[in-house]
Length: 134
Figure (cartoon, rainbow, N blue to C red):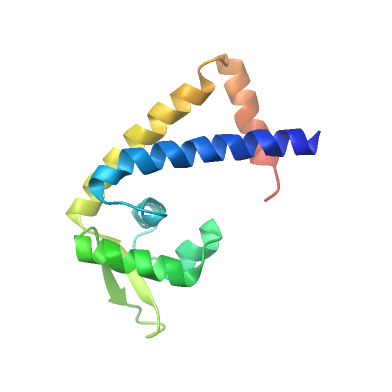
């Protein structure tokens, strides 16, 4: 049974990646750049290491993508006063505008994958996913 559930979750994740990659290509977003912006929107001033840990990402990859986002003008990186080897991340106005783009993509995808479920089933699914220990 677990294998069957995992297989379905992997398929949903692959579809999400495909949709996300296609929708974000016009904005020159690649890889996990959108995850950095989403995290920093929720937690302004967070460190690159926090982003990597939260999403289980490679620290070097997050650093690379954060630098790309900075060059695009979507985030600013400031040396963390507590640890001069770390950067604190903040969204710029352009970065904040991208959050709205992400929300639309997320909402559209969520509607698509949940379209066959009733409201009660959606609530049950959310509750079950909240109980999954990751």
